[in-house]
Image: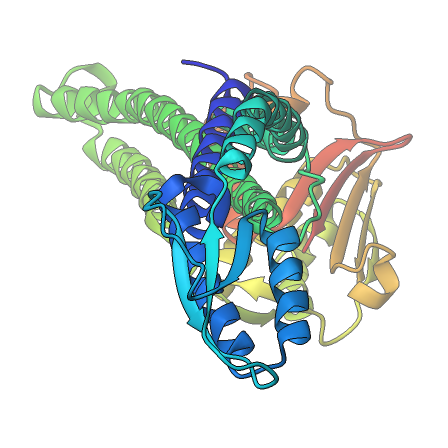
Length: 441
């Protein structure tokens, strides 16, 4: 493909040549000296006008007008009386009879056109033609250069910008602030870039959101698999124990002859198993929930109930309780699930506090917490958790002390699920003299 400047040069040249041709045609048809036919017609018309003006005028005035006509039009004139007039029948001569007011008799005006003016005019046009053509070429070259600078440069710049847009690079701005079509195109290109950049940004945000959702769903699936593996393990042992005891009682083997004793043990084991299954069902309920039951809950009321529930244990272990919980502090979530979650946290703090220790519970309203959120802090001391266990405390069936088999191992796991459903932040860690749990919403 040829360059735009070359195309414009030939376009300008063609237009210039067409204009020159049109001018030459106009000169040929409208200028008297362009050709013999035009010149003859022109002289005839002018001669007739002269004869009309001279008719019935004075002889001196007519002679003056005839001489002026001969000088201006470049023709030969001769005025003679009709009696002495001798017609030579020269081709191209014009004859006009005249009468004068101050003389008697008839006169004849003879006008003979001279062709040298026509030849001189045609020769002048022939000499000018090469100069005019060269001038057209020069003007075409200059016009192409000017067009290239004024039109091609911004077009090339916008073409490069369009290539960058195709590569999803929108960090630019087209500077052509003009009021013509190029300026409109530049503004449209800038607007298109802004819209594409915004659309791409939204698309990237959605892609990032989808990636996060996929990662979150993978993590949930991993947690489900680990949970069901743990459930299988936790269910296997008590079921095997009950089956063994029942088989021993049926066959009256050894100590199992005392059926009443082992039936009571079987009942206790099955009750523990029922409680464990209820915990599993609660986990399933939370896992399938979408938080649609969330409402404004008075968290101070839930804490009051939980502390009252563990009042006997607190007294037995001689635990010093510091309870700083104001009234009417709201928390968003499912009330039943929050009660279960907070009950697990409070219960663990009291159970794992040694006798003579202390438990401090402090609840701050959003305007008092410093973070603009409802904040619950629970510290039990003296207590300590090995740092290697802290990241796993909220996992299902994880026990920091494997030697202690009490509980289902799902308490903190359920609490974490409830807090996440409520959109709350939670953490647990060691302090200087104990273990601190923090909950914020």
